[in-house]
Length: 327
Image 1: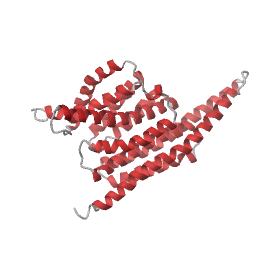
Image 2: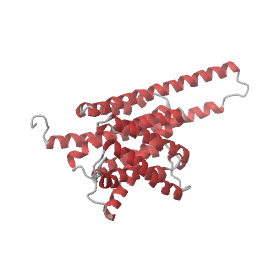
Image 3: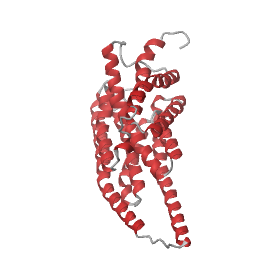
Image 4: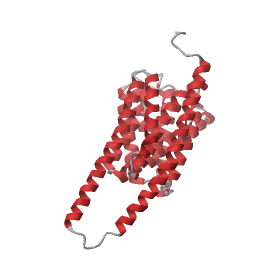
């Protein structure tokens, strides 16, 4: 066993470099891409404004074919990094963490450099969103080396991740409505998030039989669990999957494609549990949350719902059901 494990000091150095490199790559990829995106959008709008009213049907047909070709290219350039992320998560599922780390690093580098070779602004935006998934996984795999696997680990995973997430939101110039920052019907949504969170959390608990992250169900422990699960895990993940990725896919492709892709990726990012049932179930939960976000356009609702799913999953249900016969 001693021979199969790298020394703790070397692993700390390796993981620190991995996290730092991942964050730097993400930030560096945004600035040049943002410039090219703005230039492309400007030239595109100028071209559209100069189209004469008497344009021939033949020209219109050519433009239609060109648009279909562009959509096809977007699908291809979206599918390639998704395939790479899927392969990396399959390696994690099979226990080959080292290989998975290198695949994620390679994917991150490729996505960082894609803006140098691909000129479509929509592809740049989708690639920026997809970059956050390898970064999330690399940070997630690295943090247990520095901290014990406890509730507080989530702070050190999602805290650093919030930096590139915020930068991408700013550079892609999302409106508040697009990313779901709205207080419309907030009271009803907050009430609805509790029973819906219980139902989704109960289903996931029956799938993986999770352990609790708090020693007991005192008020302060539940408060800490709720705050971390809502404002770190729920908020950051929902901004990534729903506010950024799903929104961009809706604009570039279609709503059904956006829902399917984000649900698939959301499920795959739970491959660390080592069971197909968890991947399928969290993919279903991702679809429910994606559909709810599309219908309500409310990030607070989805973030709180996500948080309550985890509160029930890692707090309340394990304490109440772990000792019951049949559970």
